[in-house]
Every structure is written in structure tokens, then in C-alpha cells.
Image 1 (spheres, rainbow, N blue to C red):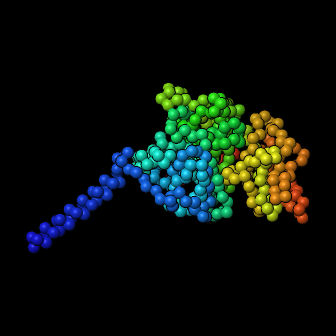
Image 2 (image 1 turned 135 degrees about the vertical axis):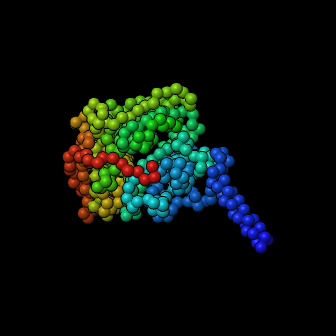
Image 3 (image 1 turned 180 degrees about the vertical axis):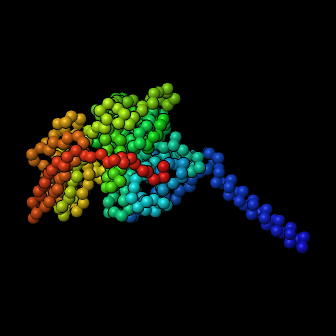
Length: 370
């Protein structure tokens, strides 16, 4: 009997020791865990609807939501792109929005999943999706001048209830950084421009229309012409650049873009151009609108009521280019529809102004895994 009791005690001690070892591994201190990836962690998903292009010179790790939640979905090699099958993300709703965050693989290997934090995030992007439309591919670009050495930065705070996108050079320019609603004291690690000139940022506040799933983007009176900022060296005592709710600023909500709905009723692809060879991406992040589909393009429309006139706006199609004539004038905050048809090789279009974009009453954004 004593021998049986002794064996039972030993067995229990072994089980408890095993649990202790597992717990110790799950709480491994920072700097002692290396995440070992296989080729599968870099491989594109054949049916993935989200494409992320890594324009940097280093490998990146991609997370869905806050990195502290540990939702690592894969990695991307330097200067490459890959597709992600987001339908496999546990708990992801069929329709909605989330922020993906990118860290360097160097940081992730150094700290491990349990040690990585927002301080290590080098780029954030916004994705609005609908899993019921698997043919509607989404594409996002990681800004190429991200500073992985974390030597120069700008200091930003988003005190609004919207997602904040910082674009460069124009109101429809490349997205340099994205901040979640209410995110404060965020260091945006970007390199100095090669010519030494400051960046001109065009802040855009974004929410997703709960009725249509489309993104709405606007700005404010203070920042609609693009203030200039220069990255500061690491360790510098710099002032936080704070972006406030447009409703609290003089002039309230403002627009410096127009919303163009391109409807493709032809039997081929259409690529939207503001001038021949000057392609623009739609809100899904692609330059093409497939046959039978409609995409929204956010196009710079200046800031005055008169808007901006485009003399060579048009589309590229299978047989060449078609310029919309007479010239198209886009007013800030207005919606337009352009329907392109092809009858026996004769491309035609119908262009209409729909009026100023109306504000959704519940104009906020709900983000998965934040």
C-alpha cells in the first residue's frame, strides 16, 4: 500500500513539474525567445484576399490588431508581396475593419511574441473587408522609407474617434502612417528625405460606413493644405503633433478630396487615370476595376469650392486609353459616378455629379482585435 501511495505522489510531482515547465516557457523573459519560422510563414495563400506589399529593405512580421494580443499571421520578405487568407483568422467577423501592424523580423526574433510591443511597430495599415466578396481583393503597401533602425521619427497623437491616416505630398498621396482612434504619443519611425526637405503631411480621418462598408475620409480646416514636418533624431526632445477632432476646430469637418465611383460595364479591366499613365488606386488599394464591379477612388480636389479640373482624366482599357471630354472638375467632398460601357468596341462613358457626401450619424469605426 505504501509503495502505491509513493508512486502516486511521484506521478503527481511529475505532472506539476511539467505544468511548471510549460508555464515557464509561456512567460519567457524578453530577449530569450527566438521565433523560428518556416517557409510556410512567408508563403502566399492561394485564395488570400489581402495582399500586403513590403516596400522596405528588411523582412517584416505582420500582426492583426494590437501586437500585444499576439495575432501573428505571417511574414514578408524585403521588397516582396504576399497574400493572406484572412478568413482563417480566429474570431474575425464576416464584415468589418482591422489594423494590421508590421514589425521587423529582427525585433520579433529578439523579443519573441511575448515581448513585442507597440514600441516595435514600424508601420500600421487599415483594412476594410467583406469575406462574402472573395473576388474583391484588397491591397496595402508598407511605406518604403520606414526607419527599421529607429533613428529618426516624428511624434504624433490622434485624439479623435477616427482612424488617422497621414499621407504625403497630396491629399490622395501615399499613406506613411496610420494611428488607431485615441492613440497618443506614437513615434512614427521614418527616414529623412534624400533631398533633406521636410515631409508635407495630409492628415485624413477615416471611418467605415456601417451601412455600405465603404470608407469615408475627411480632414480639418487647420491641416487641409498639408503642414510640413521634419523627422527628429532619436532621443530628441520634440513636441507631440496632436490631431484633434475636426468638430472642435474652426470650420469643422472639411474635405480636400472627391469620391469617384467608377462602374465598369465593359468586358475587360479598367484602370483609372488622372492623366495618361498617372494611375490612381481605389479604396481597396488596387489600380484596376474588374468588369461588372464598381470601385471608389479618392481623388485630390483642392480646397476651394471650385475644386480641381482634370483635363486628361480617363481610363485605360484593353484597346488603349479613353479621356473624359470635356475636362472633369471635381469639388471637395462631392461624390461622382462614371459608368464606362463598350458597345462593339466603341467605349463610352456617362459622368454625373451626385452631390456632397452626407455624414453618417454614427460616424465611428469599430476595429477587430484592438
